[in-house]
Image 1 (spheres, rainbow, N blue to C red):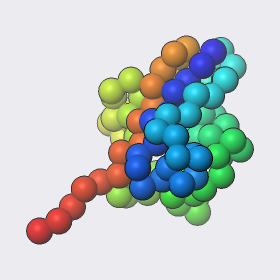
Image 2 (cartoon, rainbow, N blue to C red; image 1 turned 120 degrees about the vertical axis):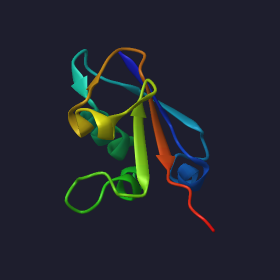
Image 3 (tube, rainbow, N blue to C red; image 1 turned 45 degrees about the vertical axis):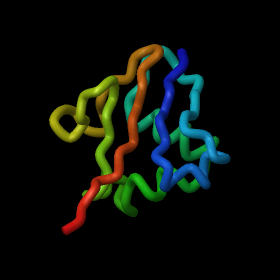
Image 4 (cartoon, rainbow, N blue to C red; image 1 turned 135 degrees about the vertical axis):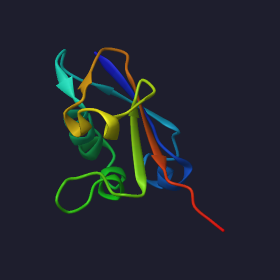
Length: 94
């Protein structure tokens, strides 16, 4: 099954400039598995999404099919075929 990961502009240097990366995943997978695959195919993206303990950095939001994973199962969120994963850096300013 394919999963599409939308890469923000600030991380596209790690995805060969591509705004989307399509990953082939097994039929049963979690967001953590998707990020593991993304790390193998596009090193650098996940290191900026997850901290050294493997948790989502405070300034990054992850969405699976429009649902914020912080409000649900986090990295254990189930990811289905043709899902879209969005990496959204937090925006701040004054």
